[in-house]
Image 1: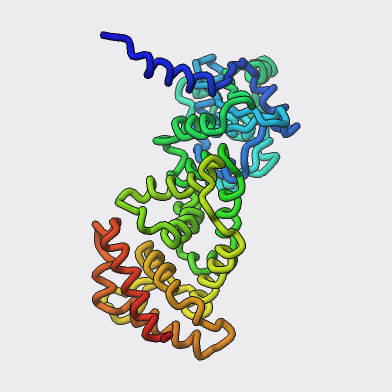
Image 2 (image 1 turned 60 degrees about the vertical axis):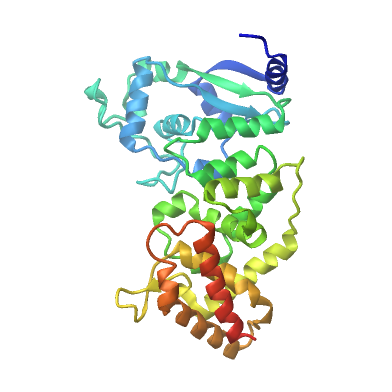
Length: 377
C-alpha cells in the first residue's frame, strides 16, 4: 500500500499534543496524596462512587493475591497536583478499607472512620467479616506497598487532547452517565460553564419543581443534564437533529472550548432560568412536571421529561409578561398549565415512545407556547 504522508503527518501532529508519563505508585502513596490534597477527586466526580461492599471487597482480595489491576489515569495541574480522571472505584475502595472515605450518597452511606468490612471474597473466604485492623501486620504492609500503574497526562498537554482522552476513557463505562462524562470532560476545556450548570441545579425553585426525579436519576446527575437541556434547547434548538447526547455535547463544547468561544451571557441566562422556575413553582408547585392520571381527569405526581421540555421552553414566549408578584397572574398561569397538561392533544404528544426527535419536541413546545400566549396576550 502506498504511503500517505498527509495522514502520517496528521497522526504525528496529534501525538505531539500529548505529553504523558507512567509511574508506579503504592496505595499508601495514593492515600498520602489524597490526604495532602495532591490528588484531587472533583466533588462532582467523587459522588459517583458506586461499587458495592462486595465489589470493593473483591478488589481488596485481588490486591492481596497480587492479581493484575488496571491502571489509574490522572491529569497534572499547573500546581503540580493531580486530578483523577479514571480509577475512582479502585481508589475509593482502598480509602474505604482504611477508613478515609466519605461517600454519603453510597448505599449504605460511608463516613470518615467507617472501615470496609470484607464480604463475598470467594477466593479466600477467610477474609470475610474482617476489616483492615483485623488483618495480620504482614497483610496490612502488603496492601500498603502494593503498586498500581498511574498514567499521567502532563500539564503541558494540549487542552483538547485532555478533553478527548477523558471522553474516550469514560464513554461506555458503567459508572458514569452521559452527563457525568460530559461534565467532567468539559472541565478539561474550561470550568466556567460546567460550574454554572452545577450551581443552577442547586437553585431552590428548580430543585422543588424537579423533586420527583428518582434517586437513581439524581445520582446520575440527570438534574444537571436538565439544566443543560434548558439552555441548549432555548438557545440552539434548531441544531437538534435526533441524538440528545450528541446535541448536548456539541452545545456545551462550543461554550467551553476557548477556540470556539460561543456566546453565553451568564447574567442574562441566569435571570431567565431563575424566573422560569420561580414562575412554575409559584403556579404549579410540585405538579410543575406532573402528568395526567390514567383517567385523564387530574394530575398525577411524578416527573415527565416531555412536560419539562414543553413547559420550560413553551413559557419563554410569555415569561416577560408574567409578574411574579401578581397573584392573579400566577392563578392564570396555573389554570392554563393545568388545562394544557389535561388536554388530549398535549397528552398525545407527551406519552409513549418515539417522541425524542425534532418534530415531537417542537410540537409540544409550540402547544404550550400558543396556549400561554392566549392566557397572556
